[in-house]
Length: 411
Image 1 (cartoon, rainbow, N blue to C red):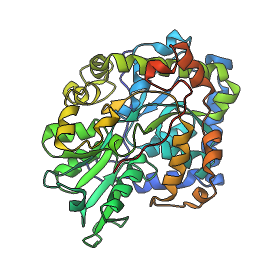
Image 2 (cartoon, rainbow, N blue to C red):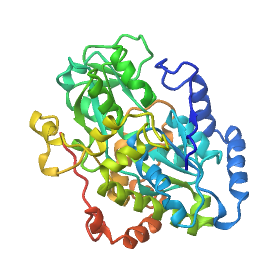
Image 3 (tube, rainbow, N blue to C red):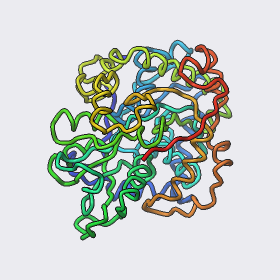
Image 4 (spheres, helix red, strand yellow):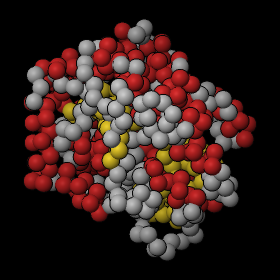
């Protein structure tokens, strides 16, 4: 319980602002090439086979963002142990690229992952894995330099996203297009037109410093980096992601299919713990902020309590509504919220949205994806359905009893 999580850094220079390094890109490309991916897949299978039945320990991989909250709360409150599982100290990574590599190779077996990235892992890299639950809803924002007052002011500027396959990339491109701006992906230093916005990938941990040094004009990412920029006075929230797509999933809980099919009881217990952690978080927001802060015994994240409290126990959301940052008051949302059910309507809409979004790399696999098929193939909701019923049913999360919804978008 008191072990300090291991922190994996992708680049030799912490504040380099390099985004994905060349080594990163090679690693990710390897996952899409059968011959090069084989050693990683073999390593993952070997890790899984080293344990019999449900004796496999829970090995969490995460980024130090509030998206990871359910996994970390489940560990910190010993909810995995309450389910009869062993849990190792969670491993903290710096970027999504290394989380994916560690997951495929079996170094970690329970991760939170950007929902669109799950599409890429299963269908682009052909790694058999399943979404078993949503990790949270909303929880992200477009944060810009103080002088930026409107989306249109980003014309001719550079904006950072955390990963090409992210809800952040999808939403910011939609927002830019609606403002009459063209999203482009050009090398650093390239000239762009006044009505173009250059999108680059940066690890979340580098975004605030990049904004402070004016290397970028804005970033869209999960909290608490938006809150950190606000508190430091180097940025302001222009729009919240949840005000653009109502109660959208940002991160999901991802398990290898070998664990959902060969260890269904293990997968059920993992999901039970995560669902209980989400319910606890909704009811104990300030305590959760304390648990995740750099002042806690576990030191799960490097973030101070003030920053995490601004996100998890936000009391200033009404101020954003009054200022016009939040335009859809009738949606009655929190800055971040937690509910575990993976609505099929969202997965279907996500597939369509990714197809309309500019991303780097080979995107040929996207055109072959049929939304309804993906909603049934990528997601395995049998575990989360049971876990939700065990804690009181959908109503305890404010969900409809039939677990159906319609996707709602806002301008």
